Image (cartoon, rainbow, N blue to C red; front, side, top):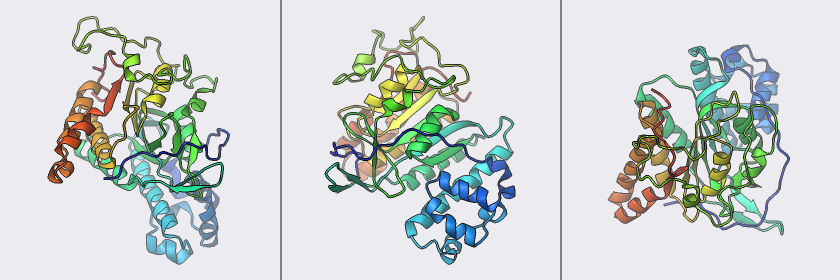
Length: 364
């Protein structure tokens, strides 16, 4: 089984934060060639723009493209064709959802950001391959969870480049934000780039913006150094969700206009960045123990189960426990004789802040 871990500790290239706005998918059929090119750029595919310009691809034909069409247009690299088709598949979903939504294109129920760069490059120029995460399988798993819940909801998938991560965290209004990728032991994320090289990024930088409505942490890395989720536990009650007068350890509310209620960091060592979201007053955060790695299949089962359970009306606490249970009883691991591994995998996921009231129902 593949795990979401890397021993790379030397910094990769760095970049300044920037934001991007995307076109309204409701009007995709009216997009010009240049609108389509801008849409390609928002997905890190600006190097394919020439083929789309040469073939006069406008919004009215964009959604009808196939892999064979892309090859005929001159998009030669298989990876580029796959990425374009993933983006088109997501655009089809967005178009249907926005058309049927009364709240407009800026409000999402689930925003999924996935990063699986190919290599890390150290400051000395040493190239080291990374284990691939099957983001396509995760996207399909979440789509299946939403379909099985038989409930109308807004979901979007994006590759986690620096630009999209910043935009999603600081500008996008969503209820549940899910990040899937590699996290280093010190809490840094390995993000996607156009070249396939990992961008080593400290998530603390996301919280250094003072604009109204953005996240504003109360301090740097609340988990601090070697502290883990136990350091966030300010309660003694073993069952705060059912205890009368249960106290939430993070009382301050989010800034006005922010709808982010739950952040799911489905990557190794993610308790470090989790503390940043907690300090920024996100009331519920799910992460993986700092000292632990997690199998790709476990992360996929957990996220799919969590999303489905939330959408059928369960509380965050109940959905979390249900997802843990399904990881523990993961058929893939049990049939391969890894029952003990499955049990350990389930225990790696933690719901934070510990001791807080997680009885909230996000989708009643």
